[in-house]
Amino acid sequence: MKQNDTDFGPATRAAGLLRLQAFQPRMGTDYSAGRNHDRGPGRHNAVSRLSPYLRRRLLTEREVISAALAAHGPEAGDKFIQEVLWRGYFKGWLERRPQTWTAYSTGLNADLASLQQDPALNSRVMAAETGKTGIACFDAWVHELTQTGYLHNHARMWFASIWVFTLKLPWRLGADFFFRHLLDGDPASNTCSWRWVAGLHTRGKPYQARASNIAQFSGGRFAPRADELADDVVGLMEEEPDGLPEVQPLRSVVTPQEGVPTALLLTEEDCSIGPEDIAPLDIRVAARCPASGLRSQRPVSARISAFEEKALADTAARAGVAAEVLQFQEPEKLADWAQSSGVHQIVMPYVPVGPLGDWMERARPILQARGIAVAEILREWDALVWPHATAGFFKVKKRLPEILHEAGLA
Image (cartoon, rainbow, N blue to C red; front, side):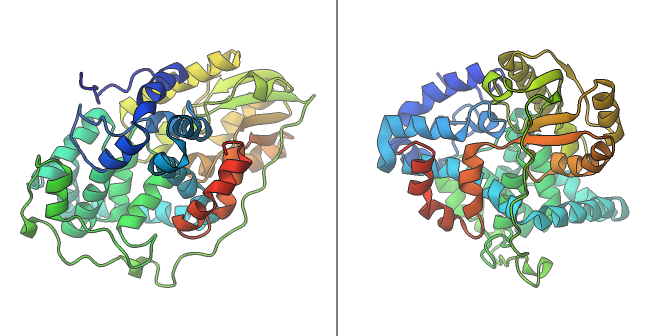
């Protein structure tokens, strides 16, 4: 029976574990052989489609890699394990170069302003976002993305390349389009992947969508003409003429303090928070804080919001806390809520670089002025991977045996 790609199932840890168990037998050579083939909606059986659960850590990288190792060992499971590692690498890369996110956000605001000022650009972007470009494969991927919240990774690469080099549209608007529709949308993976296609992440090496490659790996579903796609693909290095920004130290983390009246904030950045994480804390109040609306100035898919809200409700239930829903509006509102609850610290999962990170940067000094500290729970996996994410993926990949050993997986 074909899996239904329009329904990832409930946004719960239990549903994620069922999907993990079902795919575990195919994490080895089956995955290596089939992972690049985009068979279309309802037929993505060669890939795990665990990403919406991993993105929110309803499943953790550690346990997914552990499942691959248990079933296939380090050699046969290598390709699958590497794909999981990519997520941590991109997150760490953005943590080490937060200036890249700032530049993306500033550039996106400028691109969105250009849509208001340039009717011709607005018309071209609208045609791309509604699947009316006349390029059959691209238009089909638009409809799959907007109707299901998912695209195969190979289709994402082709899509981004066509957006940038064939349609000649601003890459940040394409990244924003993905971020507003992908159920697994992650600030680091999304931004860095679009930069990679555009030749910014790996300097001067853009990704070119080729008609023959699309025909081969779509199983012949699409057969674009060679002259439909750009054959002159040049990286957008003029956007960063001086090269990549310098690597920064990882942000320091304030450790949660025991015996201090505490407010617990649950966000989609880490839905693996459990009773063992909060048992030592004096939790006076808790809140589920949906942040998907922060992804963009433009409307974010209702599918994403619903998935996030369910994931947070599931997290609160597993953690054993009664958590009200608290919207991220103005930071003063958070400070008012915390102060009225009589707490002296807010504890939350680590907030990486991204829209929620930007929001918390605004909130921290306001909270501090009212005597409320912000403490974060940083996962061991991040602490092991991020220090190595200073250059290309190969540097992290080379340290994989060491990372797995330190994580107790080898």
